[in-house]
Length: 353
Length: 71
Image 1 (cartoon, helix red, strand yellow):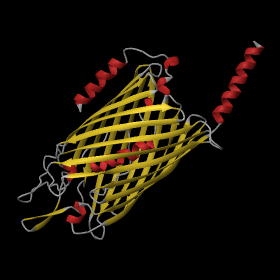
Image 2 (tube, chains in turn orange, brown; image 1 turned 90 degrees about the vertical axis):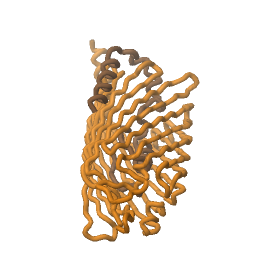
Image 3 (cartoon, one colour; image 1 turned 180 degrees about the vertical axis):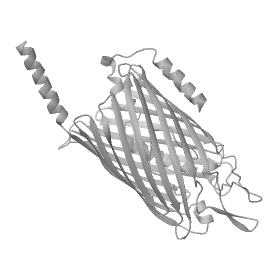
Image 4 (tube, helix red, strand yellow; image 1 turned 30 degrees about the horizontal axis):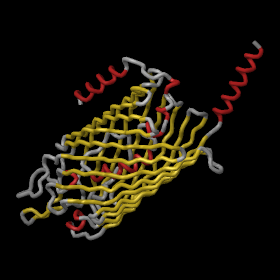
């Protein structure tokens, strides 16, 4: 009995020591987007996640987007090239013991003509000996929209978002997930800059103020012998603007420590919004001149490479990854731009100490 | 939405009917390539491109700040 008590005491002391050990996970990422429509976006982020007592997690992240564009949308408004910088600061914190979590978050982003506050609450719970994970999140966004170099233009947009997901371990080698996402957007949702001349009158595009968006995502991950996995997903989407879309994605991933490789292919197609027209003969209640609300298809294809070490210098783990994707868009009802192609690439590094 | 919830409920009920993998058989499931979202920041970068270049958004476990998306 004394031996058992000593063992129990030792185990308790070990667990307390291990539990009290805080960990910090700093991470940074930088990326570039460049397309044939003369748009370049540089993005960089830096942040850190810390765990306290193995159960409490806090995180903070800063992200910046630097945009330069002379796309057909911009040029058609006779404003030439524009430059903008978007700053985004986010923080989160809550409980996470590995099988249950409840995390609250807040983010603030601002750019030349747009300010956004976002609060969220996300939780998850493992069931059936951790074979089933239920997760969900709620979020609220409040946006204030102005127009650069224009006095008196002030609009707002409020968004309510909900996600629900169930992940299930189908076998030792199979993982499936079904996820539902729903969001309601109430307020100004068109561009403050997008005008067209109709009947010799310059008209600003106008969208319905309320938009309900819903998405259903199905995923299946299968691990093959030979240390590689195939990650497939399909997504169905519909909204009250009349946009319906289908996304199909597949990624083959290899793991052979300390290296990882993957190759991802993603295809997407959507219908246009019911009020979208390539040309409007006369002003209508709702009008869109936005190619993102027109019918089109796109495809992304590209590899990812990662190097990961369990211990490196002062770090207990270290990881660096790089990925690049080429993409092609085909617009069916947008005469000013019938196709767009380009590249998006990013590199990231993270460590634990 | 009701149909989607029904699909979700049926899938959940089906999945809940059995425990197929025991804790000691979860080695493969612990691998990074089997995780749904192994790197939240990388996923957010990727979704940022899709959300502002396509007319649909949602369903990918990312909640970020808004913006005009430089359209």
